[in-house]
Image 1 (cartoon, rainbow, N blue to C red):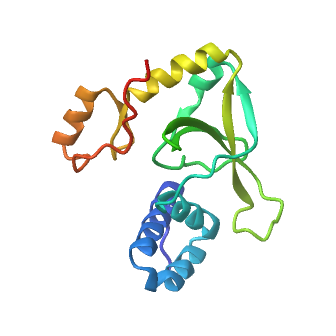
Image 2 (tube, rainbow, N blue to C red):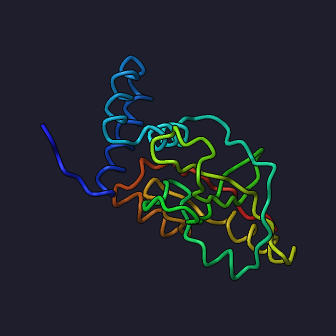
Length: 179
């Protein structure tokens, strides 16, 4: 049987397979084979890593951006961006040792072409060209609340999201005011 799906549907299937593999480890091999049938083993593994409850390793490599360049990056703190084209960049907020850390992800060509689509994710720590802006940005971010729908909200907006059922009443990140 053949089924035709577009790229966004393929990625949703791979995400669902990855989440299921974490909930039901006994199905790992079979789910991996389904991911292979969707030509998405690398993305399947990255989705599993994304949803594995372990500390996010902060990369050694860093990239210096202006505040404007940083703000132009789309934010994907809870998901991976669709459209896996080489050179696509985005930002992600992670918590590391109690502090908010901004990372930049970038789709890049895999050195080993044996991977399913030849694309990997490279991660960089974000350093702003003006250190004063980084302090302001961190203060602003640490007051944000993140709910499971992936939105960065004020406390009031977050409560509305909880009422709408986007979360079970827990913040994924609430660093509080750092002033």
